[in-house]
Every structure is written in structure tokens, then in C-alpha cells.
Length: 357
Image 1 (cartoon, helix red, strand yellow):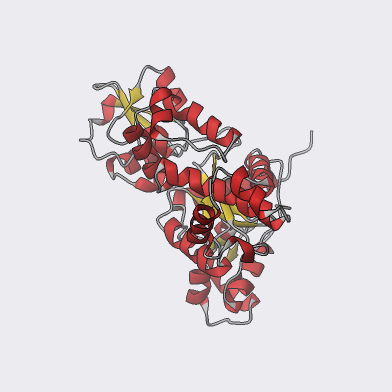
Image 2 (image 1 turned 90 degrees about the vertical axis):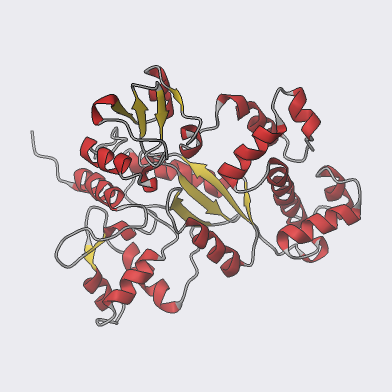
């Protein structure tokens, strides 16, 4: 894999497409010549003959070739790319999360409320109005933690009464506002990478989640975060997410070999020892599960090391892709084995000494 590579091999894409492998959704897109639409690999529509398909790295590439998005699988949603019709709405919410938007406001913008509701349920797991409430609550918690007056917070974030604000706040964070000055929330956002979008989550001070958006364990990892941090997980952006996105971009461009962003990754004592040993594996190198087991003082716990490695919530940053089988085979990877191989190839190509001359 090179810094400009954005897709698996054609053979791998064919296998994923005809096998309806959802772990590749958002990684590449399939144009169907006979229908003029493009889809994600897992699309439930009937599969065309191989001679009637072509592969693209992004929805923009597929559109440029004359294809339109499939209405069944909604490929732009899988890419983490907002379709044109909703982009203005997202920008409006980002500009002023405290503003309250009602169905009549959506209609005035030419957006059918039912369509908006379906989009937000599909992409964020909540309705548009729940998304807006989460954004307002995240902002309210920030203001409370920095010492803002509660009366000011209530009205600045679009609430008309203390009782309505207290009820909404307690529902989101589990505590009344007056007891929440030490409470944090975890904000999450999608960040595009050459291997597909990743979900990045962070508190105000540290990174706590990096997972490929198509990973089947993503929902489980988010639930673990809620329990470990006793915090709400809400959509949003903060400085740590922006920092992480920048470092991920540098990593995939081959300009970064280690991550400097502050991280917090609580686990069992054994898990934390494994993750610490994994972080010590140099860029461009690999270690076996057996070697990690020895490094943490549990030479007989190879299988437990594999389980702990799989429970890592900070993909790439804690480089669990650098752990392989004793035989030299890459072994499993939550984001898909092909991603593991692509990450290792990127690092090998950048770590390889340049020849003189």
C-alpha cells in the first residue's frame, strides 16, 4: 500500500462484493453498468455479472463516472459523506448547536422531516432532534464545567425553563446539572482515512476511541466506554478529535511513525499490560502473540493476549495490527484482515531503508 492507495486489490474487492462483506462498506464502491447506480459491497440487491461492474475509491469518483447512488444501500452514508441535500443542515447545526430546529424549519429549508429522520437514524443511531439535543447537552456540560452560571446555561442552550433543562440534562448524563461540574462526556465524530471512515471519540483532554466504522464490535466498544467512563457518548467535535484527525492524516501520508495525542484507555490490569507492550512495538516491525505474552510475564497466556489485543479501543494509535501469529501470518483483525495487511505494508514501505544514490 502507498500513500495514494485507497482500495484493496481487485481480487479482494470482487470477493468482498460478491460475498456481501459489510466490513468493506465505505472502503470502496461498486458501479453497475447495467443499472447506472453505484453501491456498497454489502448491498442486498441482486449481484450483476463481473463484466458489468467497476470499482471506485469514493462516491465522488463514482459520480464523476456517471453513476448515481443506489437508493437501497445509500452508499454515501457508508462513506461518512453527507449527501448534498443535507450538508447545509449539518453546517447550520455546527454553526449554532444551541439553536432549536423544528419540523417546520426543515420544511422551510426544503427538507422532508421523515427523510431527515431516517438519515440521522441510519448514520448516528438517533433522530435529528435527538442529535440536536445531544449537541446542546454537550455544550451545556462544557459551560457548566468551566463555571458558567446555571441560569445563563439554561437559556443559552435553547431551553425555556429550568425544569425542562434539568430533565434533559439528567436523561443524557445521568446527573442533575448542579452535580456535574466534574463530569465529562465523550464526543465522537467520523474521520475519513484511505482505509475507510473511523469513529474517533475523545473527552476534552484525551483520546479514548478509534475504531473503523464498519467494525462489528463498534457498538460493544461504545457501551464499554459508557461504563468505563460513566459518561454519555454524544456526537460532536473537540480539540482532541481535531488533533487525532491531523495525526491520522500524517500517518497515512507516511509522515508520522508515532502518535503524540494524549490517550486514555482503561481496562483490566492484564489488558493494560498487553496494550502497553503493543505500544512498544516499533513502527515497521511486528511481534508475535507469544512474544507479547512473555513480555507481560504470562508466557502461557497466548490466547488471552489475543483477546486483549482484540479488545483494544484505539486502533492504529495502539498498533494492535503489529501483532501476528508465530508462523508469520498476520492473524485476525477487528477492522478486517486486509486492513491489517495494508497497515503493515504502509509501515514496512516507509520504514524500509532507502538505497544510496
